Image 1 (cartoon, rainbow, N blue to C red):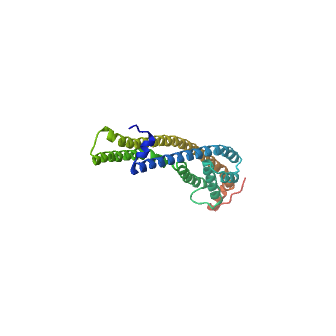
Image 2: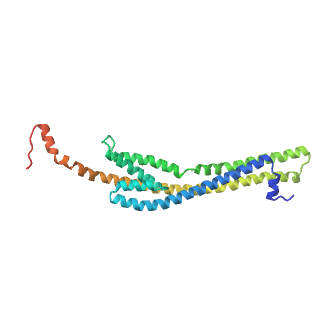
Image 3: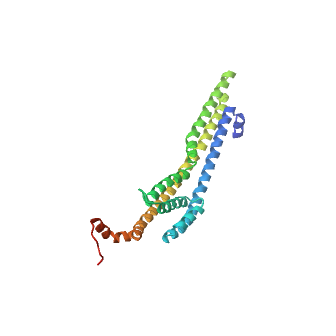
Length: 250
């Protein structure tokens, strides 16, 4: 008997059909995750490029409040999420009473936490591709094993054997295995492609975070000179007062 795919589908049992439709659902889920992640990556890259130009101007002009507002109004950019959250923490700590940890150190720690959230968002859904790529072949193999068992069970019930008696059932079973491989192979390729894109995005965000911390640390000496200049100038007077002496300027 010459089987085509339609004939094979029509002759499949309930269990084989369940396996086949499960693999189809796997394929749909993989494609949905793949195109959704592609959209997120390309959107984040394009929006982040525009935001980076504006953020650079704000930082060069020390317009920190404007940077925070720009980041909050920019949606879909991981860079805006990172820099906006870091600058917001820095400004809040700079206005608060002094504590054990300075504004720069608290900002550094906040950026680490934001980076972890960004990393989780970048890789969201990719576990679906990894699961489909590793599980789909075994699901197809399960359908093949069960299909072969059903084929030989039919031979036992009818009491007749031969290649012609079992070829149809084996063909149906092997189609399920082929379907599992057709689902798994693209899922693995899509996972590797998205992993490469996610690593590149994460690398660029790490570089931006490092440059932002360099900018904040470079601000500290300037602020310290401006705010503590009087204390430095009166340092000898304070020391003299402790020793009970009067110091008169020359």
